[in-house]
Image (cartoon, rainbow, N blue to C red):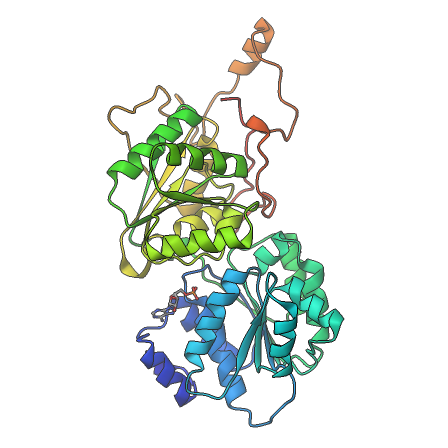
Length: 443
Ligand code: AMP
């Protein structure tokens, strides 16, 4: 129950109005220390209820303070316009019984209109770093009275190259008393650096615990011979599985476009989301999928970050994600709020070891599934090590001796010249050995 928290009655009234009954784990963990004024470093993904976990303590701080100031008092920095829109909506819903005003400034919208909004001085400002810096430079944004700062999806802001902008904006909030940093993954060195420089004696809350995320979601693998075989499997799954909405993850933009093209050619209504798509395309795709007009989204990890789509019950990993955290992040989107979900990973010989590392990370074994009529010749490695990885890799050397092996590809090159979308580098995750992806073999 939300009345376990020392929240102002007007906020509790809004919570009741929204029909939130039980707080989610991230809310239980983060709201009490945030209300005490602690800095927090929280690892929690979209869909966990993380927005309310920082919005409620933020509103509580602002509501309880009768001092009227002439400048912005709370700042929420986040990576994308969609996330800004979703967050603004959440802030407005929770502040509906208060006099607290909020506003959003992001790229892609009229600068002058935003400057006019700023002149009305909202209490809470939500926005993306790039546009905020532009307003700072133009003198239309003043952050000196910011008491509370939230960095949401900090890992993604770093992935998108906003580190310097974020640092500058943080520096502008000279009187800041409390900072909460949220990230979907445990991140890499850049995130650790930011945490150390921005937060004061933070409490670390790790909510991405694997065990929480898998409830209600079945996890399966289907082995595949090559990309064409994977495409056939996707087509079969979309035609035969029962689902409301599906997301298919690929590791590269090229693969996302290719798969999207195949699906459309076969009459599947789908959208594709990746880093090359502009805001308009993204918004259209997300709106259509949310409305239910389109059931299938093909996406890369970067593009899919921050998406909150209700009724998502099928995730297909066309390519295996590179880390356990990223896997959890992908499949954590399904089977939410007690609903059933299904996560299927398509595994070629070059995905196998990665898949087996992720199984070890999650401490579970994925269900092996075979689709009748689409069974390929590759069914996993013939011999397995105790770790579950493929045993015996001497074959190549023998082939080399015979002179039958094709010339090796230069390091870093991928099939089709496909470049992986930029995410944090392959890093060692909590409790997981570093995952080294084997160089893909030509398919
Ligand atoms: P978020 O992780 O903040 O993007 O939240 C995901 C969705 O869950 C949003 O639509 C929230 O409004 C909703 N939500 C958050 N907390 C609760 C709760 N305690 N009970 C019911 N719904 C919630």
